[in-house]
Length: 350
Image 1 (cartoon, rainbow, N blue to C red):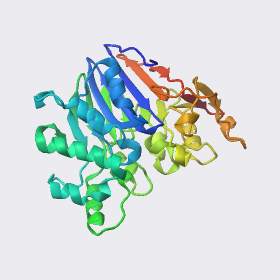
Image 2 (cartoon, rainbow, N blue to C red):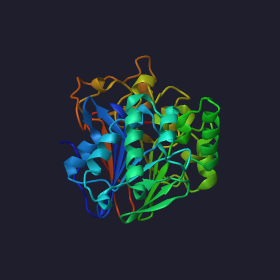
Image 3 (cartoon, one colour):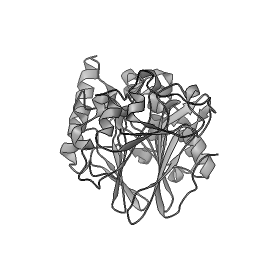
Image 4 (spheres, rainbow, N blue to C red):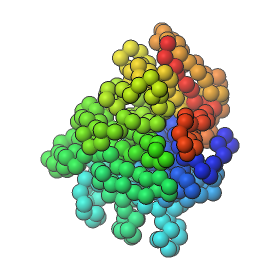
């Protein structure tokens, strides 16, 4: 199985997609695990497969927002992690809930919080554990800081006003884009900041403006799981602008096949990103899972801006963990070691 070895004294980040979903997993020394969202292909749930591969259980399971492309496989991770009758062994489980109340009537009326039966399954699994063991609940309020092994986990979004607006609009039976409620997390370890952007958008709602108002240091990161599959509406110049010629963080994006994200034509998200860093890593191409490639590939931006858009891959070998980028940092600084899954690619400017 094409997964990197664990390194006891290193911080490790795993990013998966596509399939159905986007999965982010972080291992913090000396062996603590965070699972963010989920990704599945057929009956294969990548989050649980990764945990099984390493023989570990998560310390945190977080659904950043209840959209299908993030919820697939989350319920399975929660089910496997909560089989022990002793709830002290259970992970902390988080989902931004628009209200503090967690009653069955709240759940049954929050149909807007479901995106097909898959998101309903994930939200219901979370809600069930909260009711059974209230201490396992993570409220994910902006500014919460959680010990995470030798690291710490900080919640940067959503802003309280956004949660209030969501309740108001849903109560009035008005539409509200759940991407605006996305939980942005920052992992801090040994002087490094790893920014996990979820699907937070700047348009609509000024989500990244709210993040910057809360924490102006968010742009000072060593790595960024790019928000909302690299869409144009998720980009905020102040988050992307680098601090100097030596400031070259590692950016990883997951594709969204049906919307062909990220795009690389002038003005589209992928091209915007490459205006700030010399290269970005993608876990796969913005195509259906069965059209991913068998070997990691490299492209230049100009390759993807021609009439054919350049993304031609070899016949695929599908299955876990093809569409993966993993990063590993040692204490003391320096760039990470990058591990590319078979379906991944690197795009460089030029």
